[in-house]
Amino acid sequence: MTFALSQFLVFVYCSLLWRGLKFILRKVTGRCELQRICYNNKHGARRSLKIESSLKFSKNELLRSALSVDSDRVEKTIDDIMALKKINPDTNPQLGVSLGASLLQIVGYRALLMQVEKLRREAYDCENQEHEEMLLKLWKELRPDTPLSGRISKQWCEIGFQGSDPKTDFRGMGLLGLHNLLYFAEHDKATALQMLSDSLQPKHKAGLQGGASGYSFAIVGINMTELTYSLLLSGALKTHLYNVAPELPGLTHFQQTSVSHLMQEFQRFWVEEDPSDIMEFNRVRAKFQRRIVRQLQDPDAALCPHFSASDLRLVNL
Image (cartoon, rainbow, N blue to C red; front, side):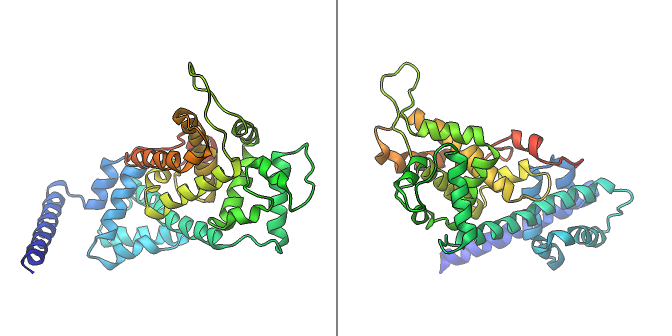
């Protein structure tokens, strides 16, 4: 009981100290906390994470509720925040733009999580024609010169599924796993075909005899989807997404991260680890995940930094 009371008193003391410090800073600088964050941090994770924290722990209901608005209400919400803080938008035009961009990232991350979760929860249904067409299209993209003998066939193992019916491999990630694999095969076909080829034969580390065991292409793709999903769910992926998406993070960002980047990084990591056989997959995957989590602890981290420049509409923030 004494320990719990002391912990509570420490919490109260720290809260009062922090609020007092914020009051002094506002008096000295003439700027509220949100202004200081925007002016002292470049656009991206450094700014958006601090804005998110400031809004989340605010005493004001309007500021806290800003985190849950829809994207089409962000502009109105920023106007309300500026009015609440008595900030003149005419003399501080850049502040509204900066706040709006960060808030779009914050609410977009929440919307992306809901979209990804919906796809993950949707089970593959062999009676659903759309699901079946997506699966058959995946085969045609990865094996364009080899006709599939039948919907149920051992040929599926050629592209890295575990048995004659791929639907059993989608149980964990649902339709999300299929969406990601098909995205990779369609949007980065040359890389996907090269990785599929590499997965079927050992890769050698320079100067060493022997080679790393091959791996199952489709299964690794589904595993990297699960890894990206877990990072998204925990919030660890915010660092990356806030740094590569100027405004709303979307499903394309998720797909780019999971299959176009993490899957390629895992292949290189697999070769570096030089496992003796596929039974070491879980060990290698766990080690790879720890490395990615460490990278994301850097507020400037961008797992695929080329993405923002090549595929996004950049704006002046």
